Image 1 (cartoon, rainbow, N blue to C red):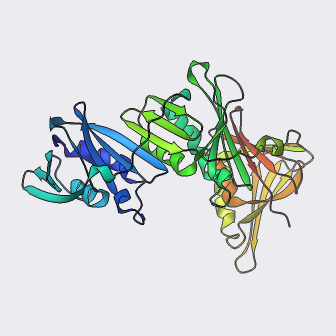
Image 2 (image 1 turned 45 degrees about the vertical axis):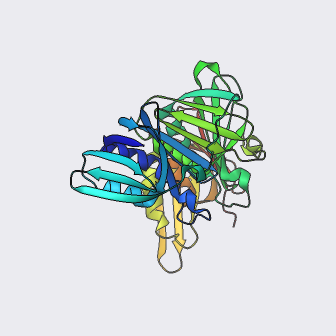
Image 3 (image 1 turned 90 degrees about the vertical axis):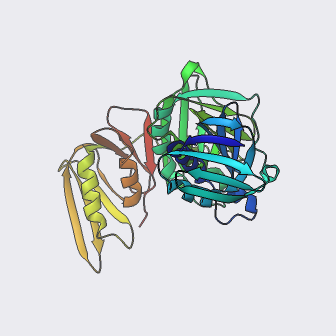
Length: 366
């Protein structure tokens, strides 16, 4: 193999593939990346046996071939080279890397030892606007569980209730986030669960890039294609909880308040709730105020009164302020609507004037 490419292209390709590689692999070959020239481009691949990423970079291919090198060493080396053309050439059991005054030989491993990256054939296919999909998954992924004993809710739910629509949801049983987005070509998707780490990688790879993202699903895997990159991931086995049944439809109090003021008030009040994370929300119809109270035996007490539009009976309820703040960061309107029933029932946060995002948070019961 011999290829000449720019340091910038190579650096970008390595940044796409490198993050899924763990430093604690039981199989040494999983610490490597596969470099392979094919049809005039070089493909860079990595895998941890659950997720595989392949991206391609342009360059001048003078000789076809493939090899594997240690990802960390190769990446560190390329990142510290000048932004010039780099020549990569295999020589017996090493890879020769040259640019200007840099001359390096890096030990390689046989490409036959690198795990086979599967190809998905058949299955269902959906197409999405990449930036809209990134926005969608960023609005829900933080609500997924990190408890590995509950694999289903460690993943992200994706499914269609009708053609042309996709619902994406995540929950850890203490809060739930659901976002609805449009699908291209009036397509639809049977319910699947995608691992949280895979979804996070998809968001990172999309970044600021625009375009159409395509996902192909079969019974056990998903293949995500975007621009020059493909991600292949296993799907989480099992059924996602029927979360729709826990979302209330009737409420006693509906409060509309300024989102930015609520964020500032929560951050100030949270100083006094560091040990418990709890802040009491009082929805006062008489005063037309949302009153936030946090108290600490060591530090003191904080009360913040926010002018709000409150319809209904009013109530008091205690929430984990972290959960509320995380949801507010995903709400895209200036005002947020908080729907409540009583101090023992979940509250619902939605953006004003929109129906495509719902965030449910369970109360802290006293």
